[in-house]
Image 1 (cartoon, rainbow, N blue to C red):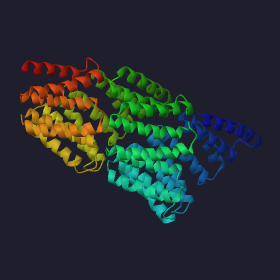
Image 2: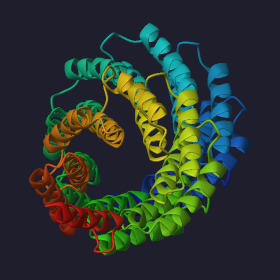
Image 3: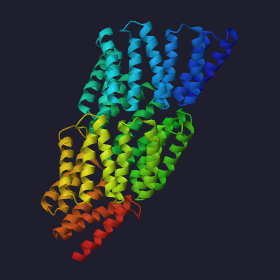
Image 4: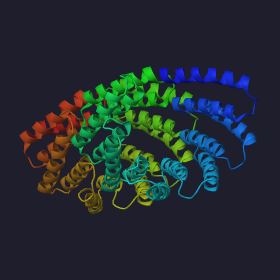
Length: 546
């Protein structure tokens, strides 16, 4: 926040002098307004940014010829603000105006044209149209490959952007290939502590995180952090990013105390460096609340989600995607508390916004349908659960390449609903489809573990106990490696195995497993949670047989 306020103070002095010295439509005055716009955009105050960028544009439209590059620059800046606000159609309109000027004013292989293509690529990325994003990023790359030396840093930017798209499409091997190309250039062209090298380490870490290779991810995140720590003052807002990523990694591993430690470090920096209504501060509250949610401290989780929501509500328009995410997160707490009607209420609020702002083929629309599926499954409304999981699958299949990790997990969810409906052959078919992806494509091993456990439950209900046990053990082995020893997801497997041992009359083994499940659930879940009540009921059933 200090850097921004200093910048504003400096620009205010500059503007005062410029206003006195120059006529009201002088291009230098437009530059002053544009500088204000940039600071407010960086602060996340998009309405203020727009106000100043539009003042700058107004002057340039009067003072400059229609194809002047500075006019293109104004259109580009306004496009960026609309993109940040989630108004993608407006953003595209201004980016295309910029592109039109850039094409007329500059030769076809000029680097500024590559920048215009990058901006439109980024916009399509934010819209979830990954094939279009790839098309524009590849246009940009083509220009740079012709115009620049093989180790030019701008080529690294293009490779990085293409890596980002492949990562979001779930094509992790391709993502890694392009991120490593970007890194190779940066390693040769830049000093060892350059911030762009930190970006490369961070992105490679992100891919390993998505692949479930958490220790490899941690190695790269730490490299990213080391560069930023050496290059920046201790409370610089850029330092918040590696802390946040390491926190996310520990969260995925189920090491919640470590996750909280790093999320709080990230939050402390943002609290000092940013305005109280900056969206990154809301993200910090959001991450901290996610940890409390996972730890079963639901009142704390709701407290922090509420803080995140209040920032987003003030800073963003009412149909902005980040507001939808806030509703989704609050719904997730109620889901974990076993309050499924509340979870459904908040998920519906999330969906109402999401469907208004995103095109119907946007991959992110799959998430609300996935949540509806999970909630209806827990409410035992299996036809509705199936309908929503199938809608989710349809979006993944249309928007992403075939055999992507998201498709795999959705097949497993559909299979689980068929199990609950007693359609065992259908259930096995969908679980096998899931495994065909998860065992042959780079996926998060925890996704594979879920499918093994779902298969185990299906075979248990079919009374094929030896096959069921094999799958439970496979799933348990992965979860024990990847999660903390008291993670609620471990309790689910222990409970499943307890029911299996009960059915095969191995009562001491059944009691051992159910006690493990109850111990975890009592520590992590509220006393009224449906899972804990179900585990206690299983304890009584085993006692009756012993």
